[in-house]
Length: 307
Image (cartoon, rainbow, N blue to C red; front, side, top):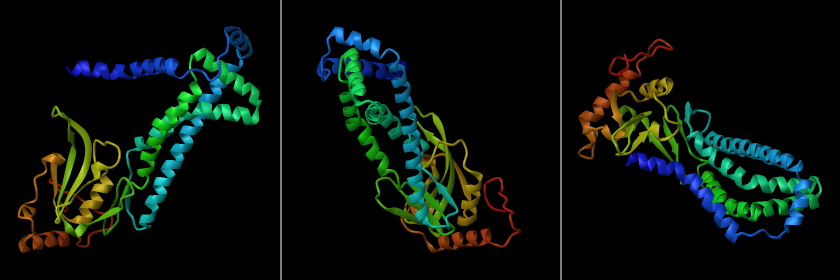
């Protein structure tokens, strides 16, 4: 059954493309119908030019992809800079999210941009004739189809991507500043409120298979939980500098678990409150962690505790 689902998934794209072309030929007719004699005459006229146009469309697409990707990443970094210079670490969203809009935008807009540039810097009449000839040979109005694709597919992806621009996590010496999706504001987690720190290996799929997405999970006294694995690309291991920084700032024993779901609820939180002895124990651990030591020296015991 699984093999059948994978096969259908691989066949979905070519099937969708074939159905799309068939529907376009039936319902989106060329804006001007050229006779076969006219199309044949234009065949000779554009025999060489079509290669130049094709290369130009690809070049415009490449420029569009890299330019829009650069702008999106730069805007994301600009929003993160508002955290201030005291931020020691920044965690960024998955890099893939900044490629969706550039990719789909290039597919939908490169043809239109190329024709517009040809009309502005070349001969507009030739650009119009080439479009009509191309539509006639394709059997549908390709420009109109691509415009609909830009409106129905690329534009929603662009809006979704814009909502992700503020996403990042900043770690300072005082706490963790998390800005999520959708311009919904940011949340700050105070290190002093952490009650448990766990390093995880990844997550399990529906079949129980473990997939690597390493991270550090922090449980806080108010019941909130933060995981470094929730933002950024999948990693087989946690950044050692980030791990050392969190151990230094939080001062709690580092526990181990395969996934976030395997982490037990801290004993101090099971009753919904932190008792006095637990608070005193946490404070003692932090005092031990922050005792003066030789500059640049940071060692971990086999169980992950500072020594």
